[in-house]
Image 1 (cartoon, one colour):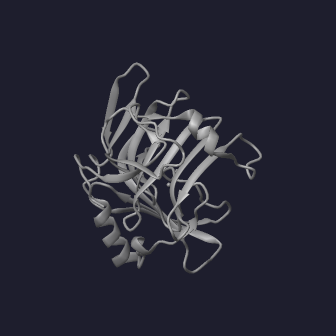
Image 2 (cartoon, rainbow, N blue to C red; image 1 turned 90 degrees about the horizontal axis):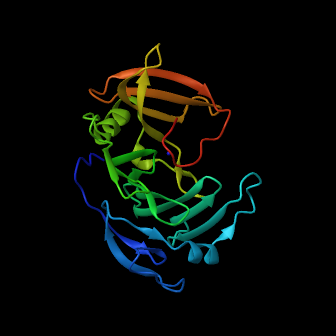
Length: 243
């Protein structure tokens, strides 16, 4: 929906059919290779995905196909979701730190976007965008956040008695959603112009089960910019950054 800055690498076990153009294993393989997170071009075997995935019978609005693999405790280890809007892939690399790789693909299976995420709701380090003409754009999502996630966690623990490390999983259907949601956002002024980058935190109100606490912190210096209480009218789910 962790102060890793600029250049970093994470090595993870890549699931078999999430493949490069040189390696297209069948659905009986368990692990194909280890991959360093980078700006490398990748391809998803669409035909193989369609063979081993299934239609999501719970979704009555969109035509959704889903494939998942699980850890021994039954939490989702890897997921691919295909709907009318495109194909997304989630790969867990570190459940303790809640780090995953998020990818989207063009309809032909070529990689479109790739980024590291904290599953609490925000991207980490370099995000890569792969254009259809072969060009690659990169954006460092930590650049404007000198008040790091580690600093934010300490502040939440000290001032709000909220431990982000102990956030519980509240949904694990497509991908993990935690009881605490943290996002990176740019605040807007009265003229709807983007101003300062910020951390946005949302969690259950410990004094009222029907409401949520919403906090906004300046990403430059950690100053609390806003605190409010919202009614819990809609369940918070999904893994994009909190809006």
